Length: 106
Image 1 (cartoon, rainbow, N blue to C red):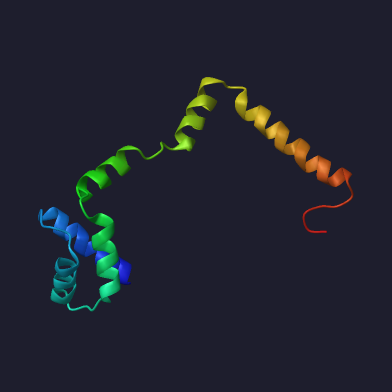
Image 2: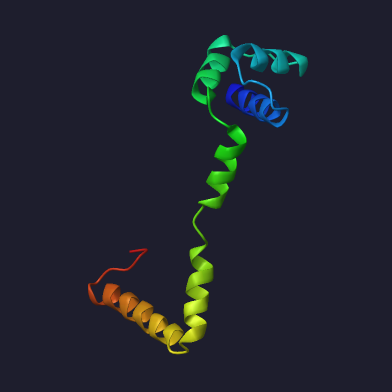
């Protein structure tokens, strides 16, 4: 819970373009009616010292990997034979377990 309090307080401070300091974090948390150990506010203040939190968040969002499902569905649509080949491979894998004399629930 303390990490969430510090995170939200840091986001509020960054949005208001105020310094993310231990004192400012504590002030916001107390104004919200919560309490926070000084160690948490110190850790967050030191971790974010000299950094632009908005820039960190935007660069993180911009560098997020794209969905693999969208890429694979596009590839499957491009080659119509891809789906039957995958089904055959799955069926062969199931048969190979049966040939060994044991199954999933044996």
